[in-house]
Length: 502
Ligand code: GTR
Image (tube, rainbow, N blue to C red; front, side):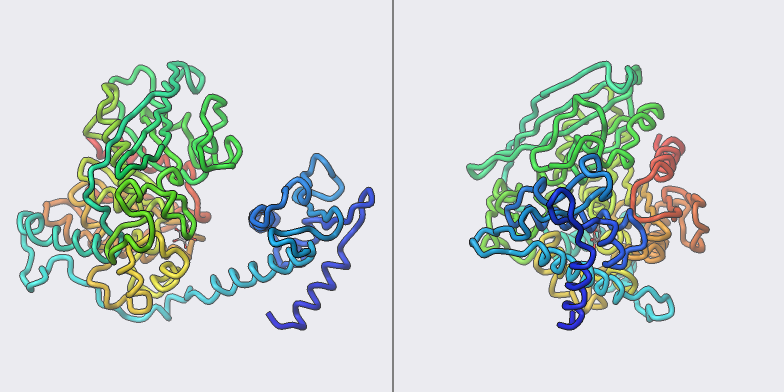
């Protein structure tokens, strides 16, 4: 940002300051306009960032953010400066207004970053996808036997060594302890169980809490295993659910993504855990992740192909599966791994690694999930590896600016699931995740499904919005709306499983 722009904004901040009970305040509604947000809903995300920034400099949120019930006239999310200045760790005095400037910088940077991505189909350019059916030594794969014996392991090893990484082959001891259970949950329709997993190895241990709901009276229920973003308590207003150790989100904060009543009423069980339990999803968090249990505590312990966050989250999905498979009321042949966004990438990788998952669901997984890396549309390998280097193994970063040289593309990740059920879902407004790239990858993976004599997506056109396209073992839809998990998505996954997962 130019100096003059900063000064101008600074003055504008001054102008919208007001005083309530001798405390200088800024209304979030005014700031919303200043920062160029037309939708209040979108601006609430910026407020959340500001709160995070405030906490990061050791400030008490209550001193600076007033909720609507405390000061109605200012509107929800108002900012206040108790004495105009506040201190940060190193004792230098920090002006509240700088927080706004930092925020402005952040907003502009994020906007510029997102806007500079390509969203023009005519600028995608041409690309050649690696052929899933040609082995490294040039042999054509003509049947499922050669696929399974030669080509599938080749691709698995490339994905593991170059993209998501391998976790060290060190023994990890896992124990389970039921911490809470009830046979009268969700209005008497479900059994609830909360199970604490302890993972130990290399002298350290880590804990993960799994929340399960199972339909009452169903002898063998299929199950969705799906990590959550904001803590177990955020998935429901059920007061009995224990808050996750690394989450400060309130109860039911992300409930809309977890329609447990609907899932239970449809006869499905669900098992979820907060992904931070396994790998705290922030830069430089390796030491508090599960990796030390595998003997890797810091960057020095990494090889270029050591797996990090995505591999760890995928590993945890399989550990939940180990547990779920011991339960009498769960159908071992109908275990589904499902995830949204970064956890959609995770679900795909978990499904590739672990054939016990009979169905794999990728909800808006985008770049390095279901979307083709060679398509220059929305998020790219360059951007994702710069923003989230801890998700992938280090070897992957070398391809940041040359995805066309990757020895694989994401259709081959989808092909790893063949001949099991795979469902890829996109959202119309989620251009960052490249819906068309997700569809094209699924379509391309059809070649492998065809080896098993299955009906495929091979000849299909990109479907209309909100139309379910199901062919053989493969499902796809692009629904209206943005990057999210909605009832439309859940309904589609359950109906698909009802029909196909037998
Ligand atoms: C974005 C990231 C995406 C996706 C998303 C999410 O910031 O660029 O690849 O994973 O986060 O997980 O919500």
